[in-house]
Length: 268
Image 1: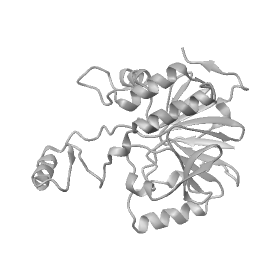
Image 2 (image 1 turned 45 degrees about the vertical axis):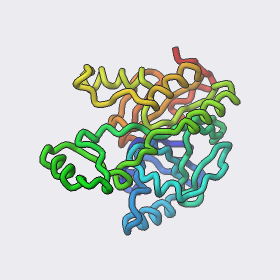
Image 3 (image 1 turned 60 degrees about the horizontal axis):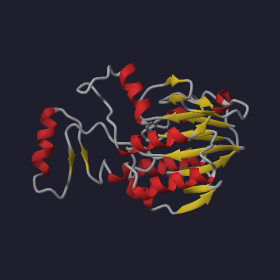
Image 4 (image 1 turned 30 degrees about the vertical axis):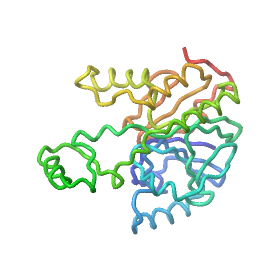
């Protein structure tokens, strides 16, 4: 059985036995749509969380978000897993599904593409090597604007490289752009605009999320893709945007409620 949820940001209480709404067994999968947060700092919390997931009966799969430590991610080698490239963070218990990959899981075909542009950086992205770092940080603190620090709480790798995007297209071309499910952190320009208009009021100056290289890439991909359903995180809501797009946050859902008995529909 496959289940899906949204951002956890290293808060894994929803996976505890007391809060988990479903009984997952060995062989089941839990997919996290980015901002998992397990890889953030090599501290006691990290070690505790590794043991926590080692003790789960099921396997946790995840795509990267924008709030991940990409330097730590690189320390785990890529391996072929269920047809696509992945990284085993905890062997057979926690597996990162790489960008632009196609996986065969329980007879279903998944296209995965993690990452997103950070939107909580109105105070700027500060650099510890900048001689004016302390001045800029004090200025950001006084303004009460959120900021990030390069390679400490923000990484350029939150957005994909040209090679990753090219690989994604090549992998989809091999299967004629036909999958069962898409798992991403953010969504295409068109769907993101729907989210903005419906939940954030839209408008140029009132926007929370802006188009970027990844949302544009997903727009291009979606124009060719045949799929049953698209799941993402990032937007901190649990909403059905339309018949083919679901945004998840704290909610956990079983994938089988979205199965359409093998019928593929092309997004219009």
